[in-house]
Image (cartoon, rainbow, N blue to C red; front, side, top):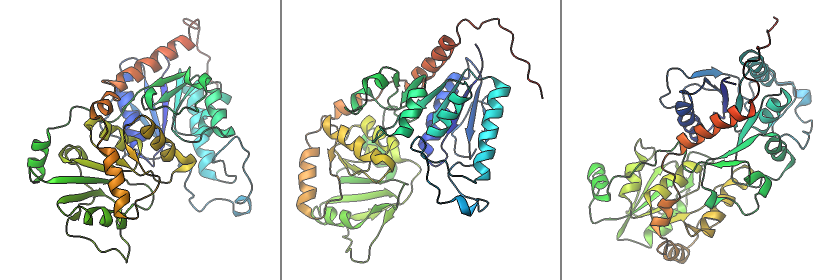
Length: 377
């Protein structure tokens, strides 16, 4: 069957959009691709043949919801299925209507346990994007068990030990998919571009966009303990009234070129969102990881496997005194940066797209030449 592949993209993370775009751009030469998302402005450059269809958000209230049903409990098999939300009704109608009209060969969910189950109930084979975290609940397992395959945007080497073998057997690992992991510029070149001194000892703190932002107070402790180093933050940093910032701590805010800053750094501090993890691994740096709160302990579980594989020095909370920073830097100095770089696959988007196309062809083998059902309006 040469039907199209549909791909649902969670609109609250650019990493989801970048992953979908990379795979779609590789797939479009083989079959049609339609991307479903609540936003159409978060994607990088897409092949003009790729269709984007906006659907209402499944997660954000609009004020039209029925208040009498707001407190009703959800069954264990779903994560986000509130009652009385017209936007969810409209989104599901748009998707099920497309299933009937387009007759897709495959539907990818990145990420929604509910939409994976919808596809299965509509008799459309689906692939679920796999994430780190405590995912053994009924909702995740319903989506994973009903999926014809799982796509993990990370290396099998950093898979969790508790991932069931039957799920691993149907998982395609695509480490670094959707992330620019091409060779980083040399440190000297990156510093020249950014106006940084060649001899400076630079600690780069990558503050992610999720949650409340990286707290600045622990960074003041680390920077003050190393007066000869330059601590530079990029991203969202949250200050508190009682901190006393040292002169060697600089906040640069959001930047358009994080790759240059990573390349310029001697050492890196960050949380462990998927994009950040793979960029730092691709660069190869002494690395301290402090996971942030996420649903299902996603970052804590990812930090544990990075620690297990010797790819990062991990602390489950921000250091509260200089000695804690010193212990982390001692551990980070032992990291083999070549082992970090070896985690990244050379062309993960191409491999993921080829797997999806092959999987779709295999699933529909034997239907070639059968006439399509006529849709009666």
